[in-house]
Image (cartoon, rainbow, N blue to C red; front, side, top):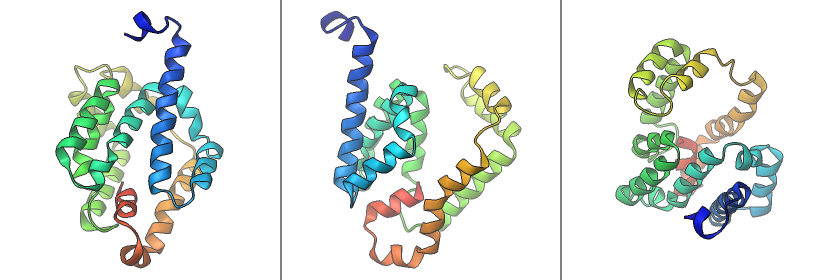
Length: 193
């Protein structure tokens, strides 16, 4: 439709997608951030802004889910699932958000989340077995063999990136009691994710 009525140039379409991504992220920052300017600053300086031009499909799917995150907060499964299904038409990995919906509600660091954390660590520890199971489920998708091969051969992230990414979770664990007593509901969902 875009190519027929607007432009045949790919960069016009990419600009439109990036614009949508910016609006969705800006909406979430405006609605849930206590300091909009700091949130934008952290987005840019952390390098996450590069996702807008590097992983266009992935970020578009994530932004569609962000646009439907209101329903996640309100515990309305059907509208949230519709948003996830729409996002999965852009990037099939978005479908993983449907089971996540059932785990994110509740207090941070609850038993459900600890079980998920242990399962995630086990999946990473036994990556070859995990990729075999994942390969079975991804057989008929666009990620069938190349995705699994890249997971098995890719060296992954640096240890520095892991430590930096762990900082918010560690802070949430240290301030667990304070968060349970004073934080809004969406903070608990963010911690659990």
